[in-house]
Amino acid sequence: MTDTTPDAAAHPAPQGDAASADGPDVDLDTRAQLQQLSTEIHKGVVGQDAAVTSLVVALLCRGHVLLEGVPGVAKTLLVRSLAAALDVRMRRVQFTPDMMPGDITGSLVYDNASSDLVFREGPVFTNLLLADEINRTPPKTQSALLEAMEERQVSVDGASRPLPDPFLVVATQNPIEFDGTYTLPEAQLDRFLLKAVMPLPEREVEVDVLRRHADGFDTTDLAATGLRAVVDIPSLHRAQQDVSAVKAEDPVVQYIVDVCRATRRSPSLALGVSPRGAIALLRTSRAWAYLSGRDFITPDDVKTMAPSTLSHRVRLTTEAELEGTQVEAVLAATLASVPVPR
Image (cartoon, rainbow, N blue to C red):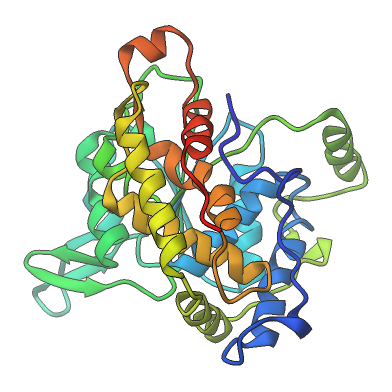
């Protein structure tokens, strides 16, 4: 299992100086709140810095995240900690082979009082949806999330119903267990802004986890850890507006396009990055620049966000898979082959 999230060691979570942030239109207090968000989440989750940063980036970009990791690496706790730090509604859905689309989106039910059919909302009507083990449910049910993720609405019986704002889907899957699972199709994978891999912790981190539990840490009582809401919905909306205003100069835009086009020419890839993937890389680079305290994108921002933004949007050739080639190695070689603008 290879970590495709921004390298927490090489690229620590940005801690830009809000007081010296560039750009007169940037809300400095809001940026400071967003930078504090990671600190609050770590009151509930030890380590997993890269995955935490990926969730914050996805929030700023109004995107969705695919979390991949073996059982027991705090995927659910991470999402619950994020919800507590944001003070938003969260729902968790355990995907199973017998789950139907209506179990996600909601359905029409007969109301005895009105003698009519009324719509009963499904769990997708929330701010933060944890789709646990999404690859355990059939494609028909997986596809029920596509409209919600892309259009931020649900259509039932010809009527479209908007979802709350903000709306974030965090889906999890187990990379080592394949019995009774259904591979996510490329069309659905492309709807996820980022893929974040949560590896097994280092020894020191695991010791810290056990020490906290020995001292009475209760995963069901995050308030006892001191975790508090530091970002409200209006502040998040302001931050999202600030991110969308981060400047992308033409040389950097061309660099993003060249990187994505290079993946389509790679002999190791049967499927390269689509234009939607290029747009996603632009969005995540803007968020990283914002968190770093800048109002413009640099090529380094693009390089930092490329692995987690693009790794799930490409597919190795059969020959490359048989040779044991890793997607991350191909992306690294692709980035190295594209001239960096000055």
